[in-house]
Image (tube, rainbow, N blue to C red):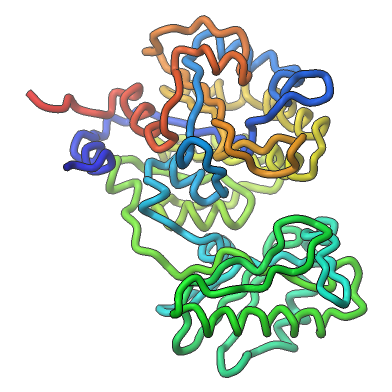
Length: 403
């Protein structure tokens, strides 16, 4: 049976139409103290006006009831079945920061954290320490830890509390579960192999965590680390070949840049602020026809449990939306890669709201871009991996299937 991705590849044609995928990371929410989600509580006149001439609905990024990570969520948005293309967070972070990854290497995403002597994790993100402070810690670790039991270790700094560790040596495998208790106040959950092949890597990872804690003893708040997303470089088809597009990623955080590189997007330096991200579109507009624009802070504030701040980020993006609309994209999709309700302080399984604007929407009678409106919108509910095909169709970039 022909896969959907293969069918899109056969039907895709290049007509020059411009498409924008605006991802408000973790945008989906749940009602807060006043009975409204963050999207409902936000004052968003520009999104509201857009909603009146768009189709709204919900996306399931992996499957009903499954809580997606950022990697699977984005793969789904780019048209890949995340259960077929399982890509760990480590390789995404590594590619995003430009780390060298050779054949057989295993990458892990590191979080600096705050731990006690008995390895109770007090703060999984060490207060989201500044990127500059994190880089200094990485330099200290790079000088102190060069190999573990014959396995070479290379460090690369990331954003805020994040860093990348690349392990090189014989007999390593990505078949290792995260060394992360997932919640503050819990004792460290040490790395464990998910198959016999992962035994050596799990042992090296746990020894690594203990050595990091020894080197950082006396530091505050970052005196330990967690390791997540053990992974090696995958083989994955490129979006440009699949969909006959010229895609570009406009993102700030390394993981999203890394994933974009893996699927064949051009990755550009687009600044650090939301204003700079939106302004970058104008500079890139003539050279590309598919624009992935990523806003991280909706997710960050949701994970922090900060309802008011997540709401404020949505309002800031709404204020910047006219800069995007002035470019007159032929198709604009606005969604998230997963839901991050502030009341849960983490990712959730709830379907993700989406908005699709083009000259060919069937019904554009929604009032606002909110979860309640998406529930009854003309876009209905579908798999997240089908959004890219819908965007291509609305851009008239798909030929007819069959006679």
